[in-house]
Image 1 (cartoon, rainbow, N blue to C red):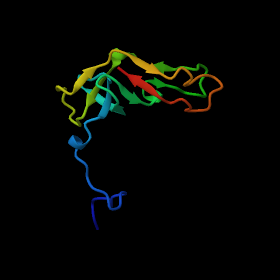
Image 2: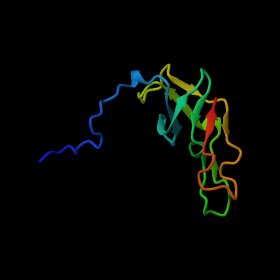
Image 3: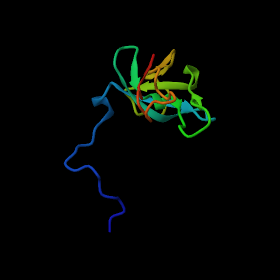
Length: 119
């Protein structure tokens, strides 16, 4: 009997973070000194990160309001090309969050336009 569950990936290889320098960890501070990963993104230029709108706006479609909780730039940090939890030279503050204007609008299909850019 093995204590380790079998992998769900067949014929795959373990990846090392250095192979994916455009990988972005989006992190928030949850009442602790360190930031914790909660969403991912992809670096698409030297200043822009492509992510999902639901990563920057928590939308609860069955609640009484259209928008329940929108993240501001000061609430998150982005870590580029690293899986380290220690703040280092790969950690950046956020200047701007821009999501698709039709995301989470009344009448839009659930999760339609689920795209955002972080600068």
